[in-house]
Structures are given as structure tokens and as C-alpha cells.
Length: 270
Image 1 (cartoon, rainbow, N blue to C red):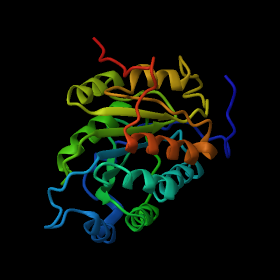
Image 2: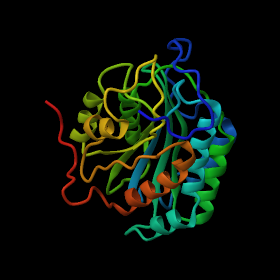
Image 3: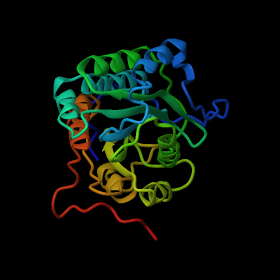
């Protein structure tokens, strides 16, 4: 398979970092992010106000993603959320607001909620969220557990202070599941709870331990990762095109535009 255009070749996966436990809550984002998040969190006036969608952005930070690529990934989400086009899509919803949480995951032993639930209903709030993400520390470690990322994201919905008409997990990554249970098992549990999982595979074609994926990554995401009502995949050709793919994907998710005719949601396995 051909190597997509990237900044530089990364070193490949290292051994699983057992020293990094599963982390929930605010993590290293710290008190400053907590204070900022509280301004987007529920208030006495909107504590039970519904939103159009509760969206978890579940982002791969395994060792196959080097520092420059991790930066491009973060910048892609920041620029997309704060873009006028995405804010317009948010405001055009029936309720005009979304809830959003940002998760980073590596091997089965590492998932971290980088930014907890935050309500976005305006350009100002979208830009505030983007600034919070810019301040949050980054890590790159371990293997690739899509199943762990989905499980963490699925449980996170219980912490949202806002009821939503839809619940969506947005999974982005550059490799197949190689740590923990199969991705299909975690997907099926989420789908059974009425959650939709969409995929943003990054097609960098980097070998893992000297081996290429058994199938193209976008095909793997369609078969093993996405599921639920209207689930879809939007591939990013490389990390440089990631921001464009993220913006397209977010607009579709926020607007509730699912898979096109002839492309039904992936049924549960088994």
C-alpha cells in the first residue's frame, strides 16, 4: 500500500505503558480548564435543558501518532469546532445547542477525559472550548484499543448534565484495534444502548510492527467500528487534510445527516 503524505515517519508502536492508569474526569487539564468548563456547564437555568446531540470526540493518541501528527489532530478539532460553519450547524438545530466531551485513548490501559462535558450554543462558547483544548497537555503512548476508547466514551454519557435527542461517539485514529477486546464487542454494546458511532480513519498507511493492516483502514472502520442509526465513515487522506475531514464530519453529526441511501448503519455482530 502506498504511504500517504505525512510530516515524517514515526517510530512505530512501543510497549504498552503500564505506568499510565485509566484516567477519568479532568485529568491534567487542571483547575483552569475546570473553571472554564463550568461556564459551559449546566446552570440553574439550563441544568436540564436538552441539547440536539451529546457528542464524544474519541481521539487516538497511540504511539503510531507522533508529536507533530498529534498537534495536527488537536488543531483539526479546535479549528473545526470554532469554525463559523460548525457553529452555524449547531445554531440551526432544533434546540440550537450541543454537549461535547473530548477523550484521548491509547492501549486498553489508557483512556483520558481531556475536556469534560461542555455546552456550545454560540460562537463565543465554541472558541472558548477550542482555547481549553489548546491548553490541555498531550501524550502519545501505548498500543491501539478502539474498544477501550468506545467503552470509556459510552460510560461518559451518564455524566452529561444535558438530555440529548441523539448520542454520538466520534472515533478517529490511524490504526486497527490491537489491544484489549475486539472493537466489535464495544461497538455492539454502545449500539444496543441507542448510541451511534461514526468513524474518521486517518489513512497514513504506516506499518504496525512491520505489518500493514489486513484491510484498508476505512474498510476496517466500516466493518468493525461504526454502528447505530445513520452511522458513517469520513476518511482523512492524511494528517494535513484532517481538519477538513473533521469539519465535514462534525457538520453531518450535528445536523443528524447519517449514511446515504444504500449505506445503512452497520448491524451488530453475532
